[in-house]
Length: 253
Figure 1 (cartoon, rainbow, N blue to C red):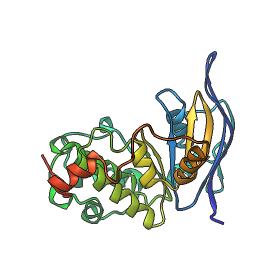
Figure 2 (spheres, rainbow, N blue to C red; figure 1 turned 120 degrees about the vertical axis):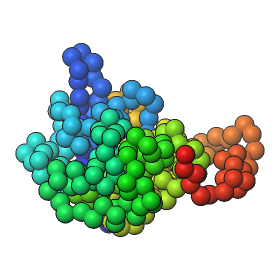
Figure 3 (tube, rainbow, N blue to C red; figure 1 turned 135 degrees about the vertical axis):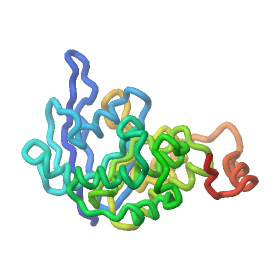
C-alpha cells in the first residue's frame, strides 16, 4: 500500500453565508498523479489553495507529509511546488535570471540549464519570459515548481489554451516528473487529459466530492449501470488525426 502523503478531512471553507467547500475528505498517495475535477465554482481551486497554504480554511484538518497545516505551514511550503500564473513572473527578465531569482527566494542552489533541459527550453535560456509562446510559458511555469526539489507539485489547469502538440508534450513532461518520484496534484477541464494522466480523480460539485476512484473504475461503474454513448466510439479522435497529420513535435511561435 502506497504511503499517504496528503490527508484532507472534513474540510470546510465559507465566505460569509456562502459555503464554498462543504466537508471534503480525501487522501493522496505518494508518487501518484491525483486529479481534482469539477465545473467552475465547484470548490476545487479553493481546496487546492488551502492545501498550498495560500488560503485559510474555516474548519477541518490537513496533513501534508506528516506536517499539520495549522502548526507547520512554513514547513509545508518547503516541500511543495505551486505552478504560477503569468502574473507571477517579471516579463523583462530572461529564463536564467528568473530561475536564479526564484532559487534565491528558496535559498536553493540550482543549475538553470539543467532545469531548462527538463522542460525542453535550453535554447530559450536567454529569452525574456514575455517573448515565449503559450506552450513555452507553461513549460517554464512547471520548471519553476521544481526549483526547491519538492515532494509534491500542484498544477492548476496547466494545458488550458495550448495547441495539441504543446498539450501532449506537456502530458509527457508531467508523466516524467511523476517517474522521478514527485507526487502531482492537477486540476483540468479536459476529461481526456485526466483519463491519460491521473491514477485517481476526485470529482467535486457544489463543494462536495461526489465520486473518487481511478478513471478506469469510474468509467466501468458507469457502463455497469447500462449507460451507452449515443454514437459509436471510434478507435481515434480528431485530435489523433491532427497530431498524425501535423506531427508530434512542439511548434514554437
